[in-house]
Image 1 (cartoon, rainbow, N blue to C red):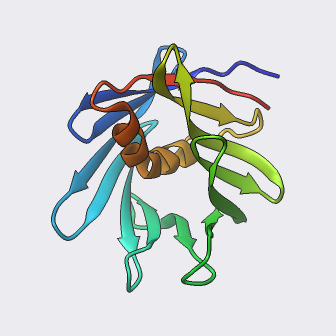
Image 2: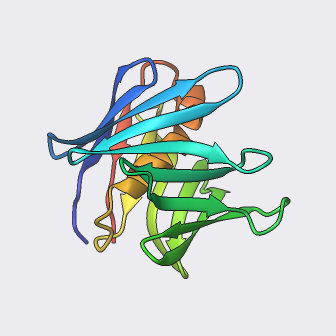
Length: 168
């Protein structure tokens, strides 16, 4: 098992930065208005745009600076409890579960590769990040954090404290 510390820091309203061992990996800026929620991601000097697509706006596409789709999601059925993620030629699954608190997990087949969940530390709600050693893509971290931010804010308030834990 490898310790791989990552953490998110809130920079301002809707703005976050991902750090790994005190080294900044990138930033996420979430823009919300009455009709849409979208984001801009900057990872390793590359820019990406995240937007909701589909009739109900329940799918997500992440495009690079040239407009190429690098990640897209869809649900197999409108009432499905999983989301299919198409990324780097693979089909991954996003599961939302209670473990024992809210947790968003990305699986490749039956192997969990990344999970963001709530945990309790010293009587406070914190975010627990678990990642597989072979997971080297930070784009999945940005996607999962974009989805998980509302859960974290609701349970931790404005004083966001994040607990990082990486496991294989």
